Length: 410
Image 1: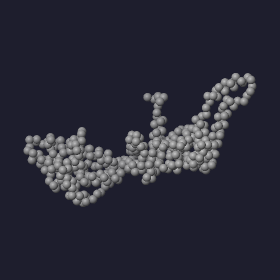
Image 2: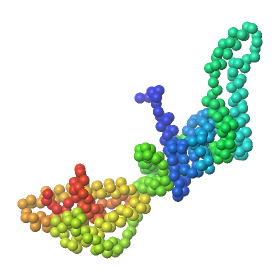
Image 3: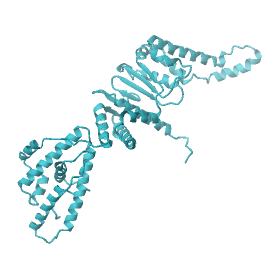
Image 4: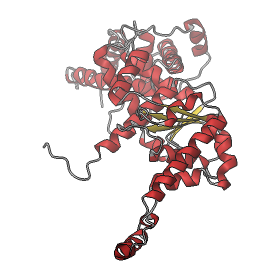
């Protein structure tokens, strides 16, 4: 289908996507305690010091451009309180018009900026007055009828939206607020369009990511920035949560492998000897296949290893809880299939002692199997994988997934 409907929202979505990618750029500039907001105080806001209005337009930025004056008018509204910010930024894809007096904005002091705005307004008022039919001073009798008609038409002539905004911005009752805002206003023009903005981001921040994975990386990052939970609650991001997500995605899409964290196994072994686990589900499941205290002690140490490894992996931002959950789920499904296979090969008429012994052997076979690698790490310790087994065995049954058991009977 090549014909677009009248209500096609492509441009609206493109503008929103552009705004989100600008917000992503700004997230990389956040300091330790900064919070970035989207669509709460404006397009993109860094709490306490910067407010950015993002303009994705193809036309030129002229002196009378409605969006320029509308932005300043919004900043001057009493409920905005621009005094909380040290930077008020208009960031736009536009270029200045050839005759725009605004093009020298960054070189102007406060008085010059005010004078420029007043000159723009004065010129706009002059043009509006000249366009008025009532400005016709002709008294020629033959024009009386035309003048009468023009007078009627004049009743319907209204100033442009831009002129109305200029009157508000330069009104006497907003002058003090305007003078406070003028030094903080920055106009950043000629910003790249959406595709170039994305390409620039890839070159600056995704050099370590394989080119064929960059789009997937950005899709995941965009999904994080537009999470429904974020939008519905508080559409904001701290530097810590953004950095964590960026590190998670980097770990997922990074070229090469990551180093698995190291922990003190000796201390964990000592800790395992001090814990009474007899009533824990994982220990009872080992006991029912004939596991003695020594075997349960080793299993407890493996379980503690897995817990410490998971904590380190998440703390380093190299993985996410969802990655851990996926790995655990896969191990549960693999184990379930292995157990069913062993049960089908088992003679169900064997006495309980024999089934227990076969189950005990099945346990050691599973714990001795080659470890399934976790994510893109250089290696996955066997204590981590076996500890995951015991964490799964320790869980309460969760439907619809099967419960983790070592026994080869129902």
